[in-house]
Image (cartoon, rainbow, N blue to C red; front, side):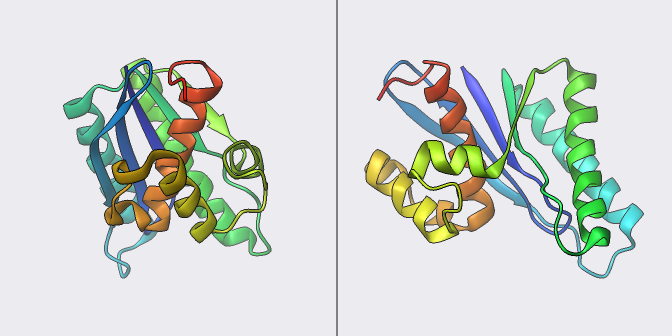
Amino acid sequence: MKILGIDPGLLNLGCVLLKIGDRDFEILRAETLKPKRNLELSKKLFYLYQNLKEFIKEENPDYIILEEVIPKANPSSTAKLSQAQALVLLISEEKKIPVKIYHPSYWKAYLCGNGLAEKEKIYFTLKRLFGEKIDDKIRNSHLADAMAISLVFAMENNILKI
């Protein structure tokens, strides 16, 4: 089964595709989509839309697992992040791929035992659980989050038994 984890963002949209078997998994592809910072919002969104749609078309995941956007102190940035999340939902509907959305505090508590776990804790928990499968390119916080939510989904649904 192929699971695509996505950490939504306008400047860094983390995507990790895992092939998951009963007791093992393989990282098929890990990529952060990064539109240029100086682009207008519409152009950033279009870049993300085109590149994510192509990623999904090439890889054909069975599930998309998405981190929920949490309102922050700045309503403008929350609205922009929500637009990136909406792109993922539109593409998944267009491609008829089921989506599961996880609140950050839920998946962090499930994986790390702490719903407020910081980026380094997430990476080191993944490293402790899965050893050499977790290489340095996953240390990027967007990729670590995308991978972590995919693994939480797989473990929670008994797709991956550890």
